[in-house]
Amino acid sequence: MKRILVYVQHLLGVGHLHRTALITSALARSGFSVTVINGGVPQTSVDFGPVDILQLDPIKTDAGFKALYDKDGAVIDDSFKKSRKNLLIKAVNQIKPDFVLVETYPFGRRQMRFELLPLLEHLKHGLEYRPLVASSIRDVIQPKSNPGRCQEIIAIVDSYFDYIFVHGDESFIAFEQTFPEATNFKEKIIYSGYVVKQLKNEPSGRREENKVLVSAGGGAVGEQIYSTVIDASTSRPGKQYNWHVLVGNNFSGAQFNKLRQSRHAQLIIERNRDDFLQLLSRCCMSISQAGYNTMMDLVVTNTPALVVPFEGVAEREQLIRAKVFEQHGMVKIIREKNLDSTSLLQAMTELSRHREPQIEIKYDGAQRMVEIIKQKMPI
Image (cartoon, rainbow, N blue to C red; front, side, top):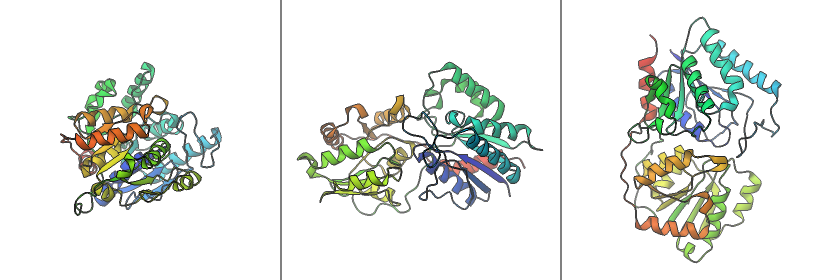
């Protein structure tokens, strides 16, 4: 049985985990022996499938991405970094993987290079054989403004990576749109198609009139959406809707309890639910951010959507993706800087009147990953 090692590190949101979990589940159920190394805070809501899981001492960050913290909120030190690096090398020596999939790096997660560069060097020179190594990245990455950073990425790809799996559709969003320098290693890029969670059952019945589903992924940076929706729900035009707010587990218990004090007859506030896709397929409208997984859920359910792309600390990834979807009639955008209860309700009215989605994209990414890796795996 061929062995696959998957490294995933989420720092703020949980989108990377969910996408990776869909891939690992497909790989494991197709007959591979899969080990997942999780470097972030464990998430009980994420099912990686029938795999082995190695949980590292968790690392997280905040919306500013300025520092790395341990599970208790203390800034990690050199001793912490050395311990994680050594554990990664030890895991490789024990597992002896045939194929290694590294999520995001080197196109992101640069803060983790203290352990990833030694890991890649060990995979290249420290074993008696050379496993295949691939990067697993989203359709859109945060554009790089520093030419030196781009050259660093190119050098790392050239030295250590056999393949770059882009979980998107080249005919919809080409990777070069956000990383033009990808032309330097175009022969290594493989588009898997979008990785999506499929509805277990077809939606039953019609959409619930005036039911609005509100979400913000893991919730770490969702407070502005939550508070704006609460304000809108108490206004005269807002009372024509029934609001269902789902709050991610990265939104603290104290914050969540404070939100729940705002509940009223037309406003439900609860934690994220496992049946999110079913809820999304039955609502008349969705309000959310524009992360990869959320946008894919909107595609699968064909739900009218108002999106507020996360733009903290010059972040552009969600906005870039959302603009492409808006061009195809799938969503309507409100910028964070323009979001208040008045603009929200106005945009909702406009969305309900004008929506002509024109989108055809490949979204069999998880199963396609199985097929590609089987083709690439040495006999």
